[in-house]
Length: 158
Image (tube, rainbow, N blue to C red; front, side, top):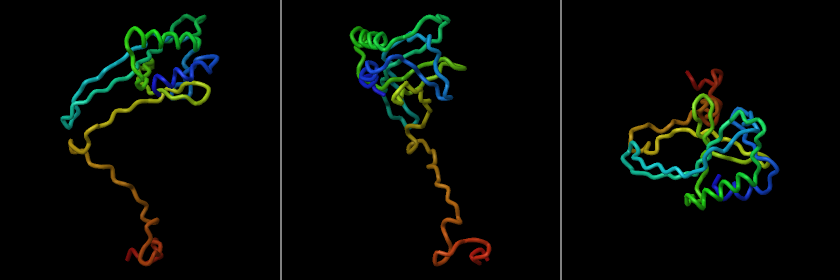
């Protein structure tokens, strides 16, 4: 989800809630402790130099049980970040504490935001020798000669 998308969604909501990948919700008294821009400048295993930039939201579960972040307040925080930091309309990455700091993409299901797990991947699989994943095929579905099924009774295995 891009920053412009969350800015369009927030005015339509009564409350801001985030659902974790296991179906639980970030406690209602969470804080957005950071909104920022993160740039990553790196070289992949194939030697290609790359740059990535995301808008980062950090969610924190505080012991401030009376706190509730309203959509207008989050929208104001975003707008202040755009004004003071020059944040662009990039994809949003959410940091949230689990066993360690988890990084998530952000989705929306029509009523609340969804934290979508991020995964690592090789960006240069064609250059670093990682074999392509072979498609698994069920031999029974292939059929034998003239389209006959390859079952022990068909005689194709003898």
